[in-house]
Length: 111
Ligand code: HEC
Image 1 (cartoon, rainbow, N blue to C red):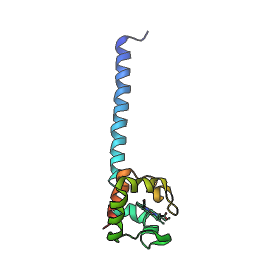
Image 2 (cartoon, rainbow, N blue to C red):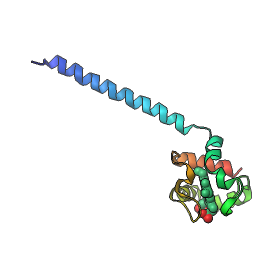
Image 3 (cartoon, helix red, strand yellow):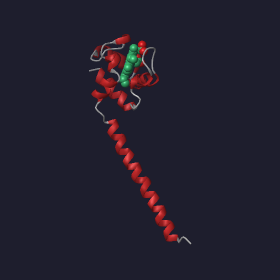
Image 4 (cartoon, rainbow, N blue to C red):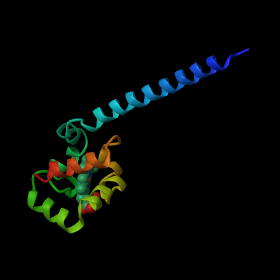
């Protein structure tokens, strides 16, 4: 027969295991989020926004970017990237990017 104490200690072990998994995945996710914006830019957005390919607004064209941010607002621009546009593929070639990553990338391009 399994005693109550055994049951309790088993339950506690399961709980501790899931809590540590949670802590671990949070750490991994935080690392992914703080990944260098410049690196993410080079690996995804740069394909079009560096050269202005397909008429993408160029990185560093602050006047155009500032105007667009003012016109549409940052949340709208983030949604544009996520759902894609006429020429821009949904996600802008960055599958792992969060909303916050997109915001940082847009700010990076607008400077
Ligand atoms: C395959 C080329 C391509 C890639 C890769 C790409 N873009 Fe774009 N992007 C475009 C083009 C072209 C436009 C202009 C709108 C259109 O014609 O699709 C655009 C427009 C935008 C806009 C303006 C949206 C609006 O509402 O006017 C933002 C913001 C943007 N891109 C951000 C990004 C970010 C951030 C990345 C990287 C994660 C990225 N793009 C990757 C081609 C690209």
